[in-house]
Amino acid sequence: MKNKLIVLGLSAFYLFALMNPVFKKYDYGAGFPLLILFGIMLGVFGVLLWKKREEKAVWDKLFLLLFMGLYALSFVFSKTQNLGFPELLAFLSVGTFYLLFAYRKIEWKWGFLRVVGLGAILAVVLGFVLYVSKAEVRMVGPFFNTWYRSHQWPNGFALFLILIWPVLLLLLKEKFKTGKAIILGLVLSALLLSYSRGALIAFGGQIVLLGVYYWRSIDKKLLVWAVTVALLAVFFFSFTNYVRGMKYAVVDVVEKAGFENAESLTSKTERVDFWKGAIAIIKEEPLLGYGPFSFRYAYNPHQTTFLGTSDHPHNIFLKIGAENGLPAMLAFLGFLISGFVLIVRRFKGLEKGDRDLVVFLGVAVAGAIAHNLIDYNFNFFVNLLLLFVFLTFMRSAVVGKEGGKCYGIKFLAILLAVIALYEGVIFGLSYTGRADLTQYLYPRLYYIAGAQVDIENGDYNGAIENANTEIELNPIDGEAHYLRGVAKFGLGDKDAAVADFAKAIELDP
Image 1 (cartoon, one colour):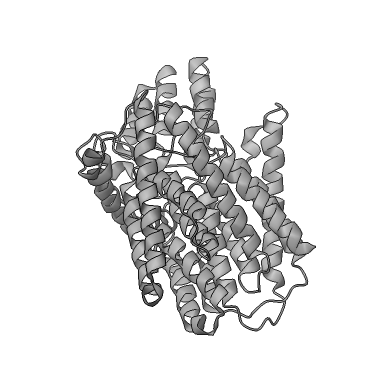
Image 2 (cartoon, helix red, strand yellow):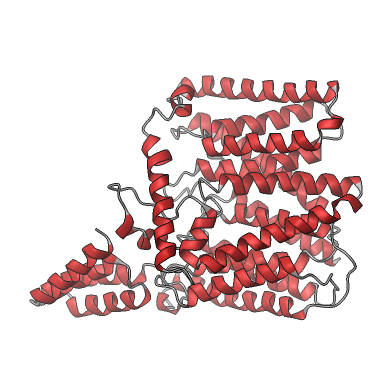
């Protein structure tokens, strides 16, 4: 009964996180309700697993706990505390999920993977419908925010496809039938229609990994089926573009592949700038970084290209290093490496079904990490969740003898649920006018917006008070200093205004 509750709850959450048209990116706030919901669900999982035993683990557990602890410290001492709480909650939540389930046998994993496959098919079908009926030139699937027309994320969708296509192959591979080839061909054509160069490079690496593993068992029947899937993917890609071309423009594949279009600057030059800037930021704050979601602010003094800025440095490890510190980056890397080493050591003792599970999920994880070396799309919670779920399933597949009961992790799950519930109540009350947004652990742009309104209304003292509070939370926010300068100028204190304007330019030239 407990396993059924867990898999039903996780499956329902996954489908909602994937297919809802609003709550997607948690880093800037739109996905915050997902974090609240998942945090509460973790508390339920902690209670359901209260008396369950688990394997006594050492290295991967130690590195993950160290990473989570350093992540929390980076938020406590963050220079952008008004922004970082969602990322903190996201990483603590998925880390806690891993710690709850990775060290025991998971009986419901195949049931959840089938739901993952179902969600992937629904997402791809929606992707085709939107691609031929909307002006967006790249397939985005369900990775959009319907409240804001400009919020379309084809690279986020591409990462999702990189994560799930090996799962679909795992579920479909036993009998190589035509219907299964059509399904996989549709999914891979969606990956092509995302026009994500980084995802296609990662996909090529995934193919190589699978080829190496199955080299000795490749036969004529498998080759024919694989070629059929590839031809179907190309056919669906071409036919869909033909249909779309009747009404909308279609991306020129040659220009896209050769970086000859307007995206060249963003795809090449800016990424290099972001990486260099992230390294410089790590040197400035090597211990704990500038704090979660601080890159956009900390990068400003290092920005070399006009309007060339980003929420992240397009690399998962550089992002962690710049925002959470070098020790956190090394701890996260240690978590991945220690888990990989343990799985390799115990791999030969697995049954064939578990071997296949570990290999295909490992290919999914490897492709996702590779893609996030040149981009970053784990700020979509469904992608981050799938990454940690797959890591959890892989670790669970090689679990040893279950021994004691780890109550500390279950307490952590319940604590996160309490925090999420608190934030959820405040979040709900804020829409009724009965609660002040300052009660959030995550005020975001509340004080900036307040200062702007005060200036418009001529309340310069109120604007200065709001700007001061924002600067306490986020001392590297150039806009806060600018607004405080405007307010001081309005009060006639021109020298103080000039000092604030100079500080704003220093922080964000």
